Length: 265
Image 1 (cartoon, rainbow, N blue to C red):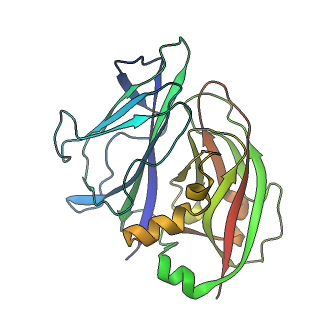
Image 2: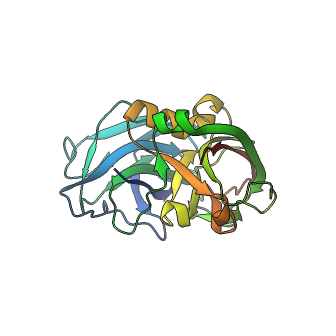
Image 3: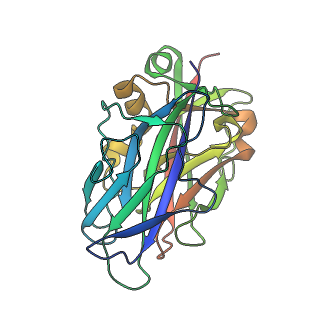
């Protein structure tokens, strides 16, 4: 079964301890995508980049209820996945997602929330995702791509860096699985977007203090969920595959090292 990942991000400015509605960011839709099936996909990740201790609440009609549903606590500037990797949360096509964010009350402080969804057989999506077993069967050498991404505005995807902006040593026309990354600073989400992801964003929590989660991000998601959610990038598409950042108003530069695994042909 083919599968495509997609990210929906929200942002709120100075929401305060009581919380305020977060707005979906430019280019994203707060509605679950339609795949032709009633149950369109699955929520496999949710994390927040809060600037103060607080909470995030995520509501959608197909969820448990519209009063509480999914609500998790946040530490300051510590984005960590809050969805159990073994949890099954189906998402109904066209359901409208609403997010409440509680955190900093300081004027101008931007806080972001990120939802990672997995869609089987998404029209216009991609089939270049693999699962845990296929990764183990095809794994060859590991290679890392090191660069720095700097957001140019708060609460939007920006700072795009092509996969080959610094490193040009990928083997021609070969496939590489994206395993995860290490980062040198915190942000909201580090995202990958290009032809091989259906021009949708596969994302990771941008947290330098949670290296074990980040460096194994996609294989661990695949292992725990049983889904084929490890992105595969062909070297021929490295110039139009982009790493982007979405973060707060501080716009901190984020050095990153993306870990790729060459796959057997």
